[in-house]
Length: 167
Image (tube, rainbow, N blue to C red; front, side):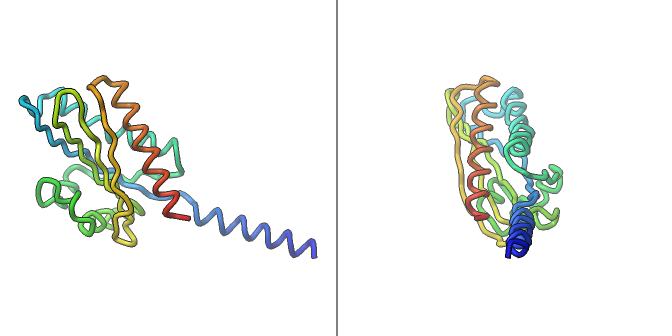
């Protein structure tokens, strides 16, 4: 009897760990929607470009994720217009599938004011071709520390959502 329990326990651990094995996740470049009186200044474009690598790094540190690289050219080719991928989960899933991703994170940086902005993401399950969540974090100010803290908060929310969805 004890031998059967040990075998069952080992098999259970093996199969449960394979369910939660490394998942492939693609993070798209953040699309900037700058609604201020001086839109798309170089500093804001650089700040927006910094969000993706920060998010990828935080996701790898928080969870067991393999980052899938999608080039800006491939993203642009899949994006039929402003916010297209953000509004079309099926097209986002197609892009993720092309690169064998399990998840694709479709991103946007909306800046309605000089005082604050928002990071908005859709988390898409590529295999099921469906959005499992729409997340947003607010950035108050433009300091680098604010960006890092907000992106980290976003990474934690994404990880929590994916973990909950996988259960």
